[in-house]
Length: 133
Image (cartoon, rainbow, N blue to C red):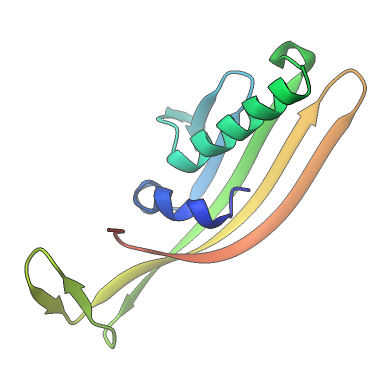
């Protein structure tokens, strides 16, 4: 879900964070980047809403879990294109350089209860613009 279409809503936050490890703890509902507490990015808020709705649907509480987290290793590369034109609608001019970011996300989700341990790993590649209007 982290690599879904709503990731674009977090482009500014992810571009600012850069490369590192993003972690979301579903039990404490807190986000960390390279072990520092940060404001939760939009995409993780979306996933939290989904997680909460699933708990409600299954009549579960967070107490049932020993741990539940999403870990995302982020590798960010800046891409500057001199061939593309970006039109700034506010300044009514076009720029000759266009900046975007290429990402590799190595994701691991882990959920642990008394009865089971669920581990899912996946990797995705995507590009995000420098700014999104």
